[in-house]
Amino acid sequence: MSTTRLRFAPAPTGSLHLGSARTALFNWLTARGTEGQLILRIEDTNAELTRPELIDNIYRSLDWLQIEFDGEPVRQSERTDLYNDAVESWLADDLAYVDDGAVRFRVPSDGTTSWDDVVRGKVVFENQNIEDFVVRRADGSATFFTANAVDDFDLGITHVVRGEDLVNVTPKVIMLRQALGAKDLPKFAHLPLIVNEQRKKLSKRRDDVALESYRDRGVLADAMINYLALLGWGPPDDIEVRPIEEIVQLFRLEDVNPSAAMFDVKKLEAINGDYIRAMKHEEFTEALIPWIANEPWNSLVDRDQLSQVAPLVQERTRVLAEGPPQLDFFFLESPEIEESAWEKAMTTPEAPLILESTKTAFTSVDWSVASLHESLRAIGDSHDMKLGKAQAPVRVAVTGRLVGPPLFESIHALGREVVLERILRAQNKLDET
Image (tube, rainbow, N blue to C red):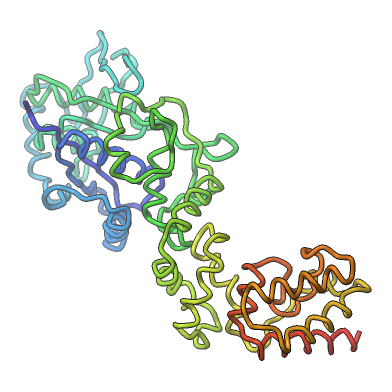
């Protein structure tokens, strides 16, 4: 039985696109699920558009996605002799001709070119609708069609998994492959387009399509892998959030849906939140550090205190970048109070009474989460207020906002002295208004 061989062939003309990342993943899933091989081929024949930093971006992004390849990367820029030999053989066999300095392939005037697509079914092109296409430019460089056909044939690629935007080039590649003497075709699987919420094809001019931008916002690699796998495919048991090892076992190209797949940022963030909640507390704390390093208050952070308070926001964090803004009040001496929060919580007749009662109670209460909770609940009862409403002025005084991590755990972590000082500061501000 022959070994399954696939390739992921990005062109280094920009940051790795979400669609390209999905293609790389589906190739990897197919290779691993069949115990096959996956080759990385850099399509860098266009010298004008290729830049070393873009190739580095591809390597970095694929490494972040934990997609492993077999053997060293193949660079098309290092294989020009192969392409030239192929073009010369076509010229010699009268399968191609020179036209204004460029070499064109002779397309048969009748008949069809077809293949059985794993995703799309039978695909047929009328040859009469395909023009004689360029296989070598006037500057001597091979076109995409030539390099693609030669490399897939030379490298023994058995499965070509790529986006459906390349369906129209496939008949040309098939013709060239046959002209090379190939007796068979690889299995083609053209993956569905990825569209935005308006059902429009993702565009780098309109949408956030660079994989690295999601990494930089704090999407975890495992969550991104899991979500990308769902763009056009779904597990048979409908359990979408699951380890990559299970996805490898379940994934089949035959199960890919040909309909367009919508990239839903909210769903990605929800899945990422699931992965964040599943992290151990120490893992989550460590994962936040690069984002905390970008905060103006990062020099005030004590690692022991961070380990204590970071888990308080873990349940509420969808992407890692959301973590630090929820934690600033633990480290700032005088956290800024949001104006809208102040207006909502501090302008009621009960607010001054709640703050005074809380300050008195917190001066001597046992400093435990349970005691703090019970103390403020009793204060609310004494003013005929439910705990949720009674705690609002205290939360705003202590944290500067109306929503945030669990209040009593936060108060406990801040300590008695800091909490009483902040309540007094809020009282003084009320006196001034």
